[in-house]
Amino acid sequence: MKTILWATLTANGNYAQSSPDNPPKQEALDDFFAEAKAAGNFIVGRRTFEGMRGSGGPGPFADIDIVVVSNSAPEIPDVKVVRSPEEALIYLKEKGHQTALISGGADIHNSFLGQGLVDEVIFNVAPVLEGKGLNLLIDQENYRYQPVQLLDCRPLGSGIVQLRYAICFQQ
Image 1 (cartoon, helix red, strand yellow):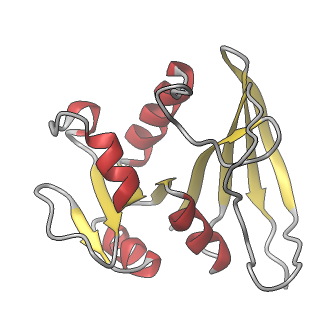
Image 2 (cartoon, one colour):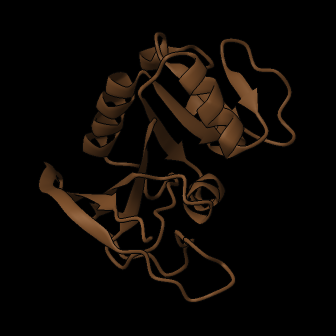
């Protein structure tokens, strides 16, 4: 199964934090909806999922398998709750998905990256500098480099540039 990590970064490389003062740009949201629809699923952390839920209705995700990775979330109607990245991927593979979209929460992103479970990354670089932010990490203990290969680079609008990379696995 191909795994794609989708994230928005600030222009200075932080993991972009949405807030009422810094809401996500519509172009990035539209791109996420298109990626989720193409994959037929997305994997998200509990806190990010709760933030996305809004009024609680399915919205644009009515026909999409949503997997929440959490050690503490109770059962959620119409959503699969799992305890680990591996369990999320097993579930989606058993449902017949060819691609898994990892979509939200720095902890979830870092967990998948740290375990070498990501094949591609999509970074939407937002036109903002952030003074304090979270980082995407592949290794929290050592200084390790992971080569990537640029697959695509394109503007989304509103100053957002999308970078798509394949992760080059080292032998």
